[in-house]
Length: 135
Image (cartoon, rainbow, N blue to C red):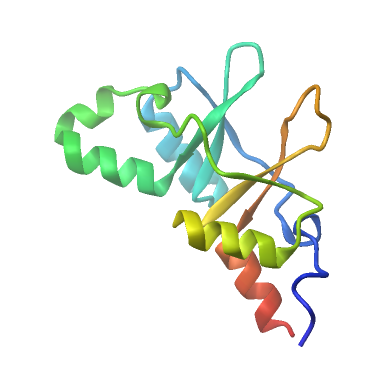
């Protein structure tokens, strides 16, 4: 079995980041989830800046709390404005520990440029399981 401390997040993350606008309606987000077959999307502000993340769990929780009023919401109303993040140079073991400690299924991978930290990928629990299974 490979040493998971030597495999980098950047080696296994999804580099394809699906985005939605902060003022998009929830119906648009639902369509995006289905169209792109993803479980989370990055939320972008009017100037293209990173604002947060919205996931299937956020959708389910809001639907449960609000019932029919759920469809009146915009992304900003239920997104996570401070998602858990990790750098691409971190190890898969570090990513797994961060997911476990914070009880999340994915981490947003940020660029290492200190001036403008932008999302460059997403690493999920499924990505980690895939790496372990391939060993």
